[in-house]
Image (cartoon, rainbow, N blue to C red; front, side):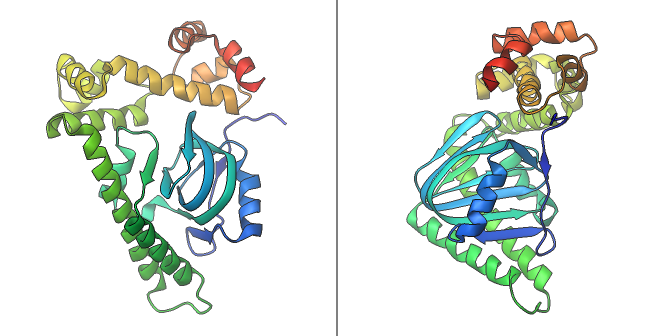
Length: 288
């Protein structure tokens, strides 16, 4: 069966936009493992809290290996698939982004790191285990309590605030050598690229949106990431091109058009320059 698009999974709502289950629920875990072995996107957040065991994931072509207590947060729109899960204990949690305070969401979504993987100490592991049990109990109460929706949203935000705080601490360690202004500019730039790359492909387009000169934007982004703005834009474009070639059956011309290239031959040349192979060769090698 031809795949016109990467599958977008939506919540099977057991409680108004929230799903939660312990990994110790083996029938449910097997059902989920079967479902997520195929590459897919979600239109919501998906979190994997791993207390013990091993988990292998691919998130936007980046491999993720978990062999210690961790929390993996997949943001809406990211493409991922399960490699393997072995002797897993912990929790799976999914929820609509609309439940979460936007400021805390932006800490995760605008970070330098594409994959939000939090390494947890014993105290943090205990805290997450406790709040996830509270969320689970509240979602699965036999009789809906007064203010149930407000209670669950409050618990979800507590979960996400804590996650964002730990993630920000780990991010600060990685970025402590840079000024706050440089970090803010880089994060804003990368968020704008994520939103507009099909139409805006030049640093000047983003510099204009940010009311900066092109040279200042380039110098700032280069100092914090090690790469020029053009390179980061191209990486976003051709990472999406790889997703579409790998996970769908769209033709090269269709992929080029979807990504804003009217001249598909130019797209092919650029794809080769960025990835080191033609779109056809990439598709063939990645599926062999």
